[in-house]
Structure formats: structure tokens, C-alpha cells
Image (tube, rainbow, N blue to C red; front, side, top):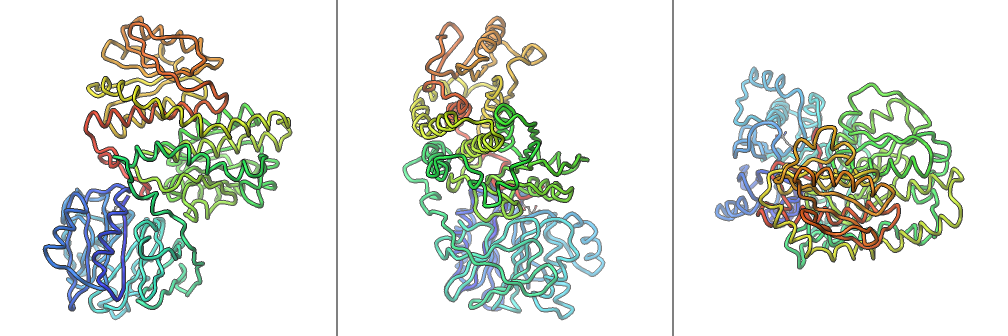
Length: 610
Ligand code: HGA
């Protein structure tokens, strides 16, 4: 979602801001802007649309400055207009960028109107600029004004602020939305994520909830929620620049689909290295936390939620304890029965997903102390708030539609299920060796599935003109049908629904006719015969079937039944393998429809607002 970058340096920071915003584009946005302090003035350029359009406008105006802030906006309050784009300015003096939502913006707006402030935008953000300006006008320093103002805000924010009356300083604040500080040599930065500043520095400080910070060229001071100075650890980011470059690919989504063999291999490296499913894979205290749990609650959103649904099948079958999976935005607002022996597992690619973070906080407030985060971004907020963590090592995921983060989450969840089974004495040495072996071979099988791309691209040509599609699966492959439908919706805008195949006759069959393509995930497992019957039900109504099965299933193509075979059945890991073709189908259908694959309309990455 929104991206923030700011810099104070001895050089012109405008190129730093523009490059930073380009590196934040992947988060999804609808407008962009920068503001700088130069020659005792605040100058600003904003545009709806792409960062490159805003860049041309900034170049035309010959902006240069050694202090500036930039922003990519994903609108929550107020339409996608230039007036609503950030930075927002108060009285021509102070400029501010904001990520998040201010819930009491209406009350603040009324109050500020009463104090004589006028508003140029419909955003919730503009009140913050005026509020800080108001406290400045009463004599507070820039940092003091920011600290007073944020105490009056309800909601979530990451903020960066500059003021022409104090051109040697930038201030920042964080509550509920990610913000970090980059430490340079005689220059310092703020950013929503490290990718924005990676070419300037890898030394970062992650701000914590309630922190404020003051940056000059030479120093950074951080203050805790009580306003007192605090020391926050410095980290050296190992984000790879290559993972943020497109290389020979047309789209990040395509690149990330193809990176899955490597991403999976990296994610299981420690497991394969230790040659055993040990609790330590989840952290040093893991054995204590995991040993006598009596159930699992998985909390997640979007694609991660489907990873959780898949894990439920594995956990209940292998471990023999109940596993519930819930959308985080539902869990966080309902009355939940607390159980101190429950393991609460949160799944989030970015580790910053606001609803998931809030659901975790809620679970903890109920006394749930056994918490595990499965996450792709080291040191992000959710793993830091969890007792145990398993980092997927997918590398930076830039495409808005998640691909490699999903399959690596599945690998992590599978590792969890087997580890729990072992802790409960439900795994023989032979079984452990067998499962390790299948995981070892998984990257190779995924590579074989990727080789199906040309066949899937041909199917995509037939999908491209359709308005609707149905996805069916059974058992552990039902969540993969859900994921396939979600991928298609997200990037092609074709309306797609997924059902457990057994549900077909309880409703969705009414939709089936010759114009409804039905995608079926039908591997050679114990439910295959049941799925075949459901396929007959579709054919009997003229529906066209597109079936993904594996090499050892016995059925072939016939009229209205198209079949693509993934490699040999890979046992319990089969859902991971069957994810590849549904990702490729969505990707190639989007190509055929000419949609913006990496930046689907209305969507954003790192969903840091509610
Ligand atoms: N509420 C602000 C910022 C939105 C945001 O953080 N999106 O990710 C606005 O609507 O401008």
C-alpha cells in the first residue's frame, strides 16, 4: 500500500526520492508526490498515475534539495485526485506524508476549522499536517509538535514531516504502519520498507509502535511512546537487489512464479541441513511452546488464508489435534474463547498486514502466549510480536498477486505439521525420512510443473474472452481451487469462484452451461473417483472442463474435457505442486487480456490499512 521515503543529505535528494518511490511501486498505488525544502520554500509536485509521470513533472520544474519526502498513495479517504495525493502541506510551511488511516479525522477537522485552518483535500491525512502546524505555531519544536499531535490521533499512521522553518531536520512517527530509518554516512533516510533506500544504505533501525524520531544529516534520535529517548537496534538488511530487478522476465509475477523451485529450496535449507523435523526450526523456545499444545488457530488474510486452510488438512491428519483457520479481520472483532494451550499461528508475507497484526494482538490480550509467525520479511512487525517464527525465504515478492510467498508458506506449514506430529510421537523414523525425501525432491517437481507453461498458455487463450469461471477441488486441494480462483480474479478481473467439488450440486451447478469453464484440481488421490463423478455432473450440463491432474492418474481427454498433467503424484505435498498450474493459468490469461499483471487495479501489496 502507500509507500513513504524521505531523505536528508548533503547531496540532491530528489533522485533518491524518485528512485525510492519507484522501488515502492510494487506495493500498489494510485498517485505519487514529493515535497522538498529549498531556498526557504516548500516545493511540491504530485500526480495521479505512475511515479514516472510525477518524475517528469519534477524534472520540468528543476527540483533540487537536500531535504525531502516522497509518497505513493493508495487512496482510502478521498478519491484519486491530485489534491488528495500526498505530501500535504500546511500554510506553505510544513509538508507531511502519511500511511494509514486516522479514525478521528472528522472531529479533528472540525476542531481545526474552528482554529482557522482550511482544507484542500478530502483526506484524513491533511488534519495531521494542520495539527502539527498548530502546535508549531504555539512555539513547539518540530519534534515536540509531532509528538503532541500524534497523541491526539486515533488510528494508524507512519509519518514523515519536514518544515521550511527547520531545514536541517526531518521527523517521523509510527503507530500501526511500518516505518524504518536508514542510516547513511552524513545522510539519513526514512522509508516504509528497505527496498526504497537499498541503493543508499543497508543499515536500518525499525521503529516500534508509538515511536517518534528526529533525523539530521549526522544523527538519528528515537523516542518511545512516552516521549523518552530509546535505543533501537541497528540491523544490516540482506535484501538482495537482484530480487527487486525484473531481469529477463516480462513481469515480476512471471519471475516470481519461476523462482519457486529456488524459493522452496531456500525455505527448507535449514530443515534439510539438520536432516530432522526439530522444534528449533521455529525458534529456540519452540519445544516448550509446542510440546503440549492441544489445538491450533491459524489467522491470515487473502492468499495466506488459503495456505492456512491447506494446513488444516495436514495438521488434523498428521498431528491429530483440532486446527481452526480464520480470516484475521473477522477474528479480531468477535468474541473468542481463549485457550492457553492453543498455538496461534499468523501468516503474512510482509509481516505487516494490519488485520493479521491486530488479530495477533487480540489473541495475546486474551492470554494466548503460544504464538508463531510464518513470514517472508525478517524483522517485520508480526514476527517481532510473536514468540516463535519461521521465515520463508522466498526473497522479495514484488508482484501484488502472491505466488512464491504462498508456496513457501505451504512448505513452512507442512514442516510445522510434521514437527508437531513428531513431538506427539506420531511419526516413525521411516516416515520422517520419507517426508524429508519428498521435500528434498519438491523443488525439482515444481520445476517440472513450470515446464507445462506452453500448454497452459494455450488454455489461457480460451479463458481470456470469458466473464466467469468455476474452480473445483476436494480435500486438501480445495484450498488450491480457492487460490486459483483468487489469482484469476486478482489479475484478469474474470469473476471466478471456487467450491469443494462435492458442493456443486448444492448450488453452483445452476451456473454451469457451455459458457462456463470449470477448472478442476484432480490429482490421483483417494478422492479422485469422487471428483470424476463431479466432473460428469458438469459435462452433463454442457460445461467445459479444464483438468489439472498428475501423471499417474488414469483418465484422458475427451470432448469438452481438457487435461494437463503435472509430474507424478507427490503425496501430501501435492497441493503445493498443483498451485503452479493455476498460477500460470491466471498469469497467461492476464497477458491475453492485456491487464496490468503486477499492479492489478484497486489492489495493493503489504496491506497496512484496515
Ligand atoms: N488515508 C490516507 C493514506 C492511505 C494509505 O495509507 N494507503 O495505504 C489517504 O487516503 O490518503
